[in-house]
Length: 192
Image (cartoon, rainbow, N blue to C red; front, side, top):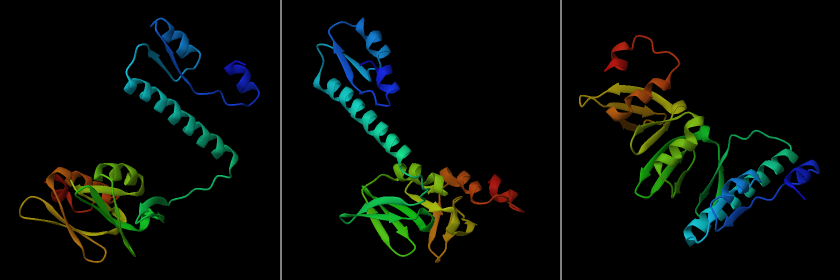
């Protein structure tokens, strides 16, 4: 059965890498929807990359297929693995994320969690929820920022709900502009 016949009958075409000893089969393999084409002889690492691509693609397609069959519900929660269990956290209730070694601490309104993740990955995950980076090791939720003050060093001090203060380094001072829709009477602050 061809890919087109599978799709007509609403069956998902298999995701497979192809392999051959001749380079000229690469175009043919890609035209036939192979996820990757490995030229023989090849290293184990190259074969693993091709198989990983196939497995990842298959998992994504299965997830997309199951999403089509399940009722759609918009969730603003994120799932994190903490102390041997999965905890669902509303990112709008997370105040700050701080890097400490190979871990980040995620300070929630009612609790704190330790995650083995980098601050850069957390910044990407939490950016859509209004988090900004203010230091190479600190992200804050814009909803909890109460005050910013200029420091003699050229950096800024930022205070969150609850009175906790953080330093905003010069590298990240431009991120402060996203804290408010309008800055009134603060031209000097923004341009420094």
